[in-house]
Image 1: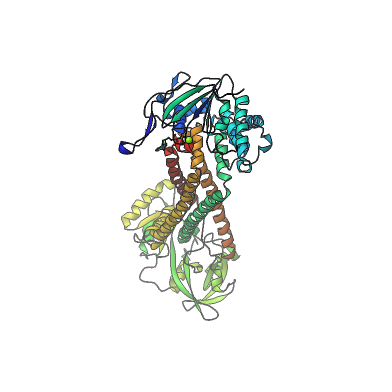
Image 2 (image 1 turned 90 degrees about the vertical axis):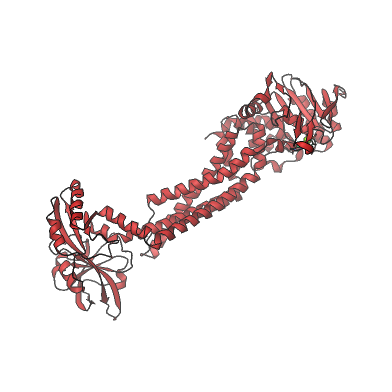
Length: 223
Length: 378
Ligand SMILES: Nc1ncnc2c1ncn2[C@@H]1O[C@H](COP(=O)(O)OP(=O)(O)O)[C@@H](O)[C@H]1O
Ligand SMILES: [Mg+2]
């Protein structure tokens, strides 16, 4: 449960939401704008403290952790791809990818080496030394993905990964995530309201007005 | 260097414009602070030039004396009384007073005349021309070849001029380690001639210079001089006494202090503001770092590193610039009195650390309060 503000101006962003996500699956959360998807994602990933309720990740109730432990949890368990990527314009592409490793105290050279390997995975090794602004939208998205997976997290969180991409690029990116990044040991949660990529989901949770209005198991997957 | 600091360094330095603005602001501020303080130190050093050049261990004077130049004559018995103090190795008279020199073209130039003990010539300066024995010949004077030497139209050995309407002959040129503060030339002669050439009130003894038998006798000598109703200061104490006078009893100290404070505030506002803008513009990125899993402590380290890196760079450049300018100024203006002392450097360093501290504090508060959720929401 999450609400913003108090009294008459109180907005209930999330109400009575209960869901499970499993390793090896790609879980979609869809819903119209303002339905609480980002709020839910933030609560699940230890970024936004819920007003009530619990989040359990790998047997740990994360909202019982203190701020530093939460940061530690995010750093070691989660990978994020933010809606607007949030790449660092004054760093090179490879340095951007290396950030989670640097926060994990890896030595600089080693972090760069690993980051470069992950740039290869997303097919951008030739862009390693360019600043992200020199890259196209789809390439920036792939840089953000490389940054999210560089520390090999168990859980990947994507917020509207295709929102600022054209249909074809968006599709290719999600297909890439599905085929190259999803693994049995990994759980991927994608928030989207892009119907063009619906086919890649294992399960889809539909939200409206802060509530879950339906769960579709492997429904629209046309293989 | 931990990779987090490498990251902090890149985030800072790659923002060329801001980094340059920060460095320029800090350099300028440090430059101004060090410059002000150096000027002041230079002035203070010169105010004590006579004490330092003379090299006496102990100066006996009237208790009301504030600076060397403003001596208050003491009766002759003081010299004998001091000589009879147990622990005094020797004590000599010292004269310091002002006179007017009439130059060849008829213009007047005021000078400082120093009279050395006839017998010992204690406190004399090394000569660069002439012979010291000639100081005993008739009307003999020695001119100090310091920054003010030109004002006497560059006299040489044998030059004749009038001092207070008495004929005087230059018999030597001396070298002074430190020039005086007041921009007037200095002449040396023997004590007995000095008091003849310069009209004096009843008493003629400006100072008594004392050499103790050993350093541990000094407190006892000071006590006995105090008993006589006079004051004995070691050279170091005298310099401090003079410094104290200029700092606290003239407008000089206050004004320099105000200028230094202004330089500090200029530096603080330029760098504080630039650094704050830098943090604000990067707030989104700090938010992203936080969301990814940077602890508050990590971000504090990043900001502190950036703040101190810029501050120390600005400090180095500011001090360097100041040293360069003083060196250049001294080439052009021999009279220019500025010295960079360690105290000045430490003071400016502390000020820079305060600037860095305040600037980063503002940024740190902002970043600590930052909600990564706001970044997440886009
Ligand atoms: N910081 C906030 N303060 C007030 N209301 C908020 C805040 N963040 C989100 N909301 C509200 O919560 C609801 C859900 O928002 P969000 O989770 O961003 O929706 P979605 O991601 O599905 O578009 C919306 O009504 C939004 O206005
Ligand atoms: Mg959203």
